[in-house]
Image (cartoon, rainbow, N blue to C red; front, side, top):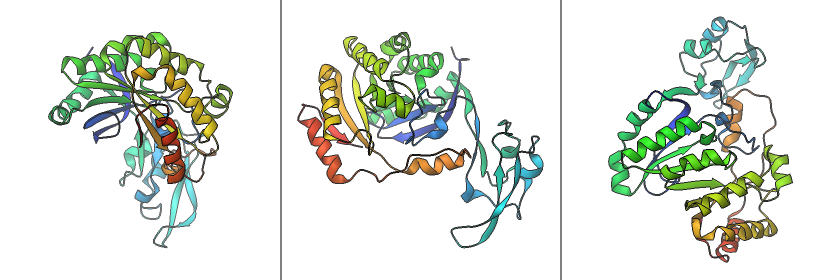
Length: 316
């Protein structure tokens, strides 16, 4: 079990939003959904991939090691651009059609402006990191949250990690989209104290149009988790023009009422634009959803709407 390997892209300590108490969240690569507002686009692909952080870049006139290091000749000189301080700088331009994510340019980059996102780690390696934080879990009633991406798309690793946590008397949470086969969820149920369960949109056709997948499996799995005795924190991203209407939240209320006894908390996650710059770091020329974040007035109204159904609701 200790040699089972998963691909992580971050391990974040002192997390206080991903379940009760002080937690350490393990983020795994890979997700079957393609939500255009995703605040962690680096989590979507299952493979390790190249990122570029322009504020670290020294500019080709001061460095340029990435140009000579790329075996695929995928890096070229870009146009002159201005930094936030008004200085002229020449940034590299990376042709993602040629880049094979070999990491040679990241290894050569002195400033770590180019870096690889995605690290293969064994369960033992991750547990070694997690056990450092166990005193904080014990003092705060916290624990470990396995997240993503979609962590259940790496089922063998997630299951092994959860088992190891329970053997060490650590509270466990699984942050999931619910878009996986039921037998995978069923396998982790005995080792999962809490499911952080995302419900992005109640209309299946619209859900598929926006995220790439329908929602019937997600809703059905939620019902099965509740029937099996699982516990939920339901997470609802509040996305302008998608699911922020009174009518849509009535649909949330009606569905959540079916599994009400299993729900400890409903979290409203207001849309924000922090993911836009992350999309730019991935160097992919794709359209990104950009809108005005929901107002405090709207969020309070939707919070009160679900509270009228009898749920405890917080705004993340």
